[in-house]
Image (cartoon, rainbow, N blue to C red; front, side, top):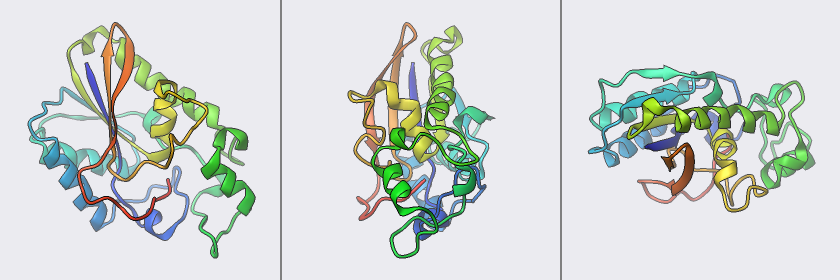
Length: 214
């Protein structure tokens, strides 16, 4: 089986530099364009299932990807395990230098090594997010009904890294070098219940100049 794990398209929160978490921000126009470009790049792939975070930015990304790739008839299954990290008191707070509304040292730790941060006040711990997202991936890999299937999963930046953490060569490097770009595509190949990362953060548009937050 093959599992395509895709981060959602761009949102105003990404461009304006505030944490979103479970805040239900929609895609902006550029985000819809990025999802459409990515969907067209995936045309020719037949998806048997689609699972999405219930948050609108991921759900709309799934809708666009399916439509543009020629898979418009595939139903979208919403699964809370694909949601972004619950950031608690950090949600909708700005994080960029010069406009940061949080402890700048903790924000720096978030982008350098969130495992050392531990958790988010009023929200989840990093390990909680890893367990939650990886339970979805493990279930997909081990379900015999998915043998030979191709599955699309639309999720979020932090959730993507948490879901794939155990498959990285260096799981201690949470961000795997950087925050995944909007609509970055990761592909996991599964055999006998074991997953292997075969496509890593592939994008199908002009290389962005800067990273966008969660």
